[in-house]
Image: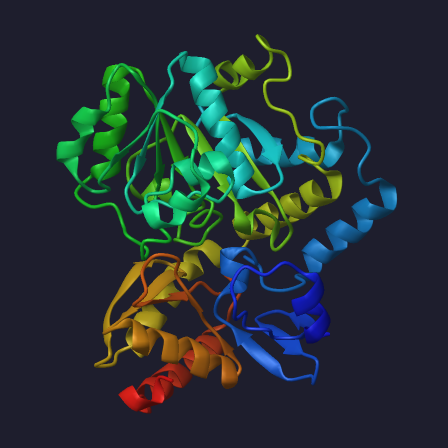
Length: 397
């Protein structure tokens, strides 16, 4: 199977981890030999309820037996999408009432950019240095890392950049700005938190000049930080909210959410201002609905902050400089990138799943399912400490 994987599937790196999957359940992924691998990554924050959560599986099964794809997005009234968007609106501020369902986070970013330009009549989009919003051409244009963009230029025009957490840069947001696009917590950069009311200050500046604020909650959303959405921690409500990843507990989905007034601008001049074939797919919407119900009707969100405390108390080691992030969106920042690589690769051999961050080579991602137990946290943390205890510089290679 691995030989066929390497031959017939396009690869993203020269050396994929190559774990051959048999099945997955709860906090564990099982390989072809039946060995359990404790999952501290959750499909890069996507498997919010762990693997094959019974309520999500049942929702998928039930809906798939009724109907699957029947029409392109927005034409037919389909119960799962209606129920989901209505429930989502009930958990959001009043100005975030209307949801456009798409297939991924990066597609949601594309839709949000288009919506902001269409509604404001302006063209300038401002992003942050060290930002990551996806890899399609519009999302890539917002990325704050030139070395990752240069091979694909020319990108979309009229994109400017500010430094995250730098109030002095807010003057760059002007009457020419259609929107400011920020990750509520910068992910690829190393789980950088907003400081000193930064998001509130951005919100205020956008209000002053008539620009829209787009917050990317693709990674921290759906309970991962101890609130349903992390903007709730920071006294800042966006004009457009972008979501994805943990939204359907492991199925491909994304959405952008705004007021009906703003969203209606995609209906005319031109009609079909944004279209998608599979957005709002009833099976995916049913999974999203089951996921949102489980997250909001259980104690998972509250437990997330307690689990964060447990991680922080157990992950104390001379080779760990700091732990960034919030809730179950955590980054171990090691002394150097060699230690980070050693930790991820050695853990993989010992059947503990860790992963890197895109742009911070010293950091190791910890973003387990929200459903992970305290016993599983202790088990994995003890394993991390044991691996770091055994580190020797000569062992890196």
